[in-house]
Image 1 (cartoon, helix red, strand yellow):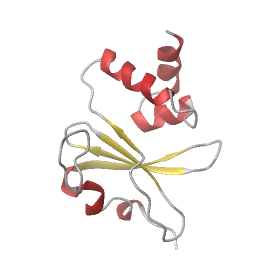
Image 2: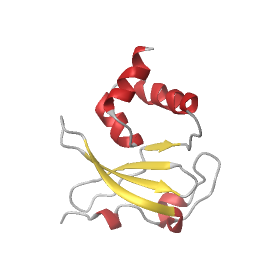
Image 3: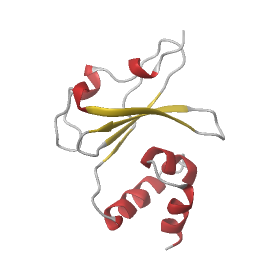
Image 4: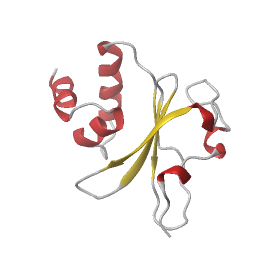
Amino acid sequence: MERGLLSVFDDDDFKEPLNGTSYDISDIVSLGFVINKSTGERFARAQLGDGTALIKPVPSGDGRSDIEYVIPPYRNTSQRNEIIKALAEDPELTQEMIACMMDISQSTVSNVMRK
């Protein structure tokens, strides 16, 4: 049975503070799917009220997965660029995936990486 978007995040994901802040499921202001086009792997992206984004793989079947990435809120381009650079250190992430996770364009990620 495939899990729907609304069943991906639950209260267990918020039991431990994320980036030093405690949240609960009611802090989610938007949900969306991110798909890695090269592998087909699906991720759920939960945007929290303070700008933090949680990225979690969407397992097939009834398997449960943990939050894989926590993207802190950023208030300016410099902070955004530092997050992009930190994510780019993960060899499993492509520029396209980073762009999807941060809800920005792939060309923005590319430009940051070139500098």
